Length: 108
Image (tube, rainbow, N blue to C red; front, top):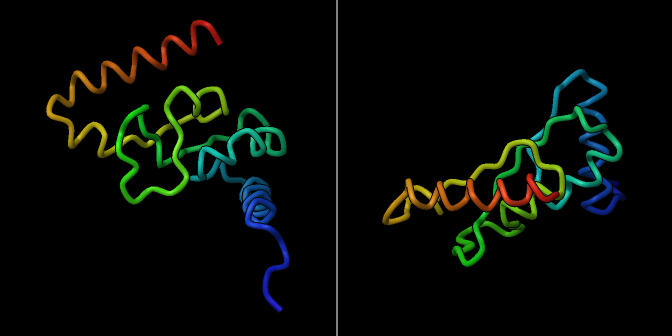
């Protein structure tokens, strides 16, 4: 009784179900992004919390990834909250993140 799948298999099953129901995408860990793009297609949108710039505190997030890693994994929308909002200089932190992402996009 219950679910006899690994967490990764269950997450993939739910993403495919969401796509079959006509949803445009899902909120997921960035760690699932590459696989979800493979099975659901590049047009299936992925919103990912738990994105943390290198050197940032993880906080209560368990499965984190840097913005650069998330871009490479195929994430469409990154949720980056506390590293920006709790920064002493939120604008500078955001600009640093944007520069790091731009470097990956230009060379990736």
